[in-house]
Amino acid sequence: MTKPRPELTGQAEDYLKAIYELERGDAPAGTNALAERLGIAAASVSGMLQRLARLGLVKTERYRGSRLTEPGRAVALQLIRRHRIIESYLVTRLGFAWDDVHHEAEQLEHAASPELIERMAKVLGNPTADPHGAPIPTAEGRVDERRFESIAALEPGAGARVARMSDRDPKLLRYLAGRGIRPGARIRIEAKEPFDGPIVLTVGRERQTLAPGAAANVWVEPDASVSAAAPKSRARGGTPKRRASGNSR
Amino acid sequence: MTKPRPELTGQAEDYLKAIYELERGDAPAGTNALAERLGIAAASVSGMLQRLARLGLVKTERYRGSRLTEPGRAVALQLIRRHRIIESYLVTRLGFAWDDVHHEAEQLEHAASPELIERMAKVLGNPTADPHGAPIPTAEGRVDERRFESIAALEPGAGARVARMSDRDPKLLRYLAGRGIRPGARIRIEAKEPFDGPIVLTVGRERQTLAPGAAANVWVEPDASVSAAAPKSRARGGTPKRRASGNSR
DNA sequence: CTTATATTTTAGTACATACTAACTTTTTGG
DNA sequence: CCAAAAAGTTAGTATGTACTAAAATATAAG
Ligand SMILES: [Mn+2]
Ligand SMILES: [Mn+2]
Ligand SMILES: [Mn+2]
Ligand SMILES: [Mn+2]
Image (cartoon, rainbow over all chains, first blue to last red; front, side, top):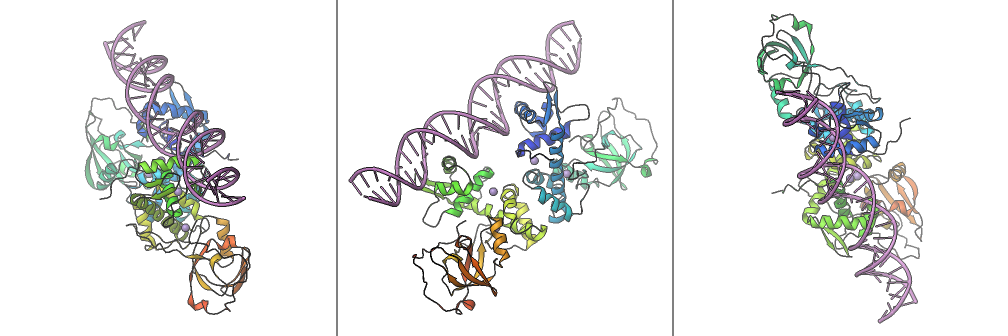
């Protein structure tokens, strides 16, 4: 039943992926957000969105934003599958550094055939997450879409397990990894300065301080085994904590 | 010293590779030949050649043909290196069929970074030939450029070792492999019918008949150990044997 | 030599993708 | 509710790459 969708360009694929990553349940992906994410002028994005709409891959509401149609979503998920399997393969079979594979995968994802991807996946034992903790969609397009909270959203006293981190900035990844922060790591928030101040946390048994800009790129799931420990002091600050919502970027 | 040549498109790279493969010592690559090889209209090729000339990658003599400049040749050789290492990797590490990798490599060669290629090469132990017997240029751009004779050019009685075969047509590759003809195989020409008739040859100890159209895609090096055996009957035919020249395709 | 054929280039067009500048619509803050 | 700011779109242009049809040049045949 899979229609032989007439070869999309790599560019178009990247747009679909970006929309997938930016639309948030009810909220469609904004043109400016897409433009920034893709490093392309907003005007150009407008144009491309119209083409994608014409192809039935996105639904655009003028001046309001865009969301994927079902076919568009399917394309995006396949691309994401390719990306994440490639990343996994490069790290585990070819010795790439985990902070360095994103860029390579960004290119290869458009050139790798489904056969290649399935062969890689098989060699790897059909992994379900990439090196950065991101879930890998199945060949049928199913994917774990749970959203996690970022470290920046946790309150002092909270314990958590790092589930996933953004792979887009190698420098940031290296910085975080150097502090022991990587998928699977257990952390506990010790203190949090107001006004977007630094976050003090324990990683393993090291105490670390993290800028909220960095913390926003690390998503965690609650971890009861660590949680109960520290004193649940009322958050002291002034700024009303806006729940820094799930896994953007 | 390597100027940061401003990212060529994959298309442009493929043109350069095609020119490399089609120019023959003195003879420049013809526009029509390029067009056929690339599956593109001759008029379009004319246009691209002008752009490549403007970039200093080819030298075109109007109405006469094109040849690579030194920089152009360097680009072509790097592309060929990527192509052949990818083919080798896919066959030996990912279980691809050797008659099936060409198409995949044709895409990946434009997306794979030098780092990826060198990592693959290392894992493979820096191979010097791809699965079809084609030599792999070094990272510095050195390559074995010997030309071999095709089976079609051999006289009855001649013994030879298969050095290399065209990888462009999977069906043909499967056909030939099914007859034991693959790089390294030892053969001997038993008879050759005139007027482009079939070629009778021994592969291992099997006797095979081969159409000249197929034989033209297999290149061999002389093998003295087999050569002396059969009776060197004078070629019987009428057609003056035009030396079917080296490794085209 | 001269013409017919083969090869190659030019002209004109199209599509994908990008840009900047100018304009329109929506959102926000007073 | 309204003006300013933010977000998004349109207009006009550019580049890469392709096409077909027509013209130019080179080569082969008589
Ligand atoms: Mn990409
Ligand atoms: Mn990743
Ligand atoms: Mn190619
Ligand atoms: Mn090959």
